Amino acid sequence: MEQTAVQELEQFLTKCKEKSHYWDLNNPGDKFKGWQDNKALMQDYAKWIAKESNCPSLVMNIDVPYKQMALEAESLIHRFVKHRGEWNPGWSSLTIHGQSAERTQPPHWYIDEGYDTEETSPPVGWTDIAEQCPVTVEWLKNKWPFKKYNRVRYMLLEPGGYIQPHHDFDTRALAAFNVALSNPPGVEFALEESGLIPWEPGNARAIDIGRDHAVYNKGTENRIHMIIHGLWGDDMPRHICESFDALLINIACLLYTSPSPRDS
Image (cartoon, rainbow, N blue to C red; front, side, top):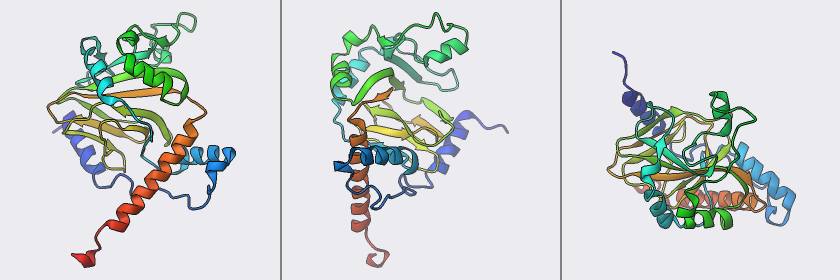
């Protein structure tokens, strides 16, 4: 009997759950010691974290006014458009920075599909919904360390909706930033060989989307995230390095405080 999409999704989730999220994380040791006072070393460390640490996701040390941002997104639910076809039921999106609010794919997609040519492809910028999202726009302009934005989108996954296993790049690296504006109970975000991402509302995470990944909303509430694409600003490498150092400390603390089998 041919498997259904949900059965295949459940198999993928089960396989991912065989691993903990950070089980295979690389530790640089003293290789980048003193990066805080050496800009070149800081740049090298940030690149190593993104490409060689084998980090599946990294919580950024940047505060997010997620409750207000979620309210802004929820007020525009009627504007959201279907994302990536019927094979991902319940998944929709709305663009706050891009070609238009309803254009949720990258510009080259519309050229490849024949909607635009190189000459007629619209420029990217703040879309018409931006004025209805002042908290989100202020945060992006003044708090998030990018010097230039490409696409920035609200992403909605309705109860019962799912995103089938896929990868967005052919190489593994921390290559996308995903912000949890809401992440209600019952939502599972699985990454290949890395278990489930331990999301909490307000997390801004760099994610390795070169790994196969999938999301299933088994709960009863909408899940709203935001995906940010653009160019790093001057402060981003420091945030990456500080956030990774904090992760290593947290992991070390968990290992230190975990009970020994002899204690049971």
